[in-house]
Length: 101
Image (cartoon, rainbow, N blue to C red; front, top):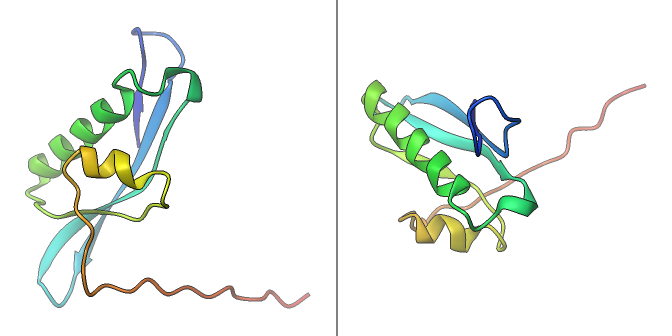
């Protein structure tokens, strides 16, 4: 987890949760941005981009060259502005698992 602050010692204004995983078929590790949040009052002032830069620096330090993120339509322009591109030929599937009482 990475945190962004406006000033040292102040409360964080944003966080990024990063997970490193092994892609068995590729035989290499990759990183996934699990969550990235910036407080609404400071959006547009560089905190998100600073978090992305910190994510990428962590990846370089670990020798990881592939970073993925899943986002909604609202977040996609931010990631695209940071150089992330939509993946073709990838389909996201999900399923809710019911809990037995």
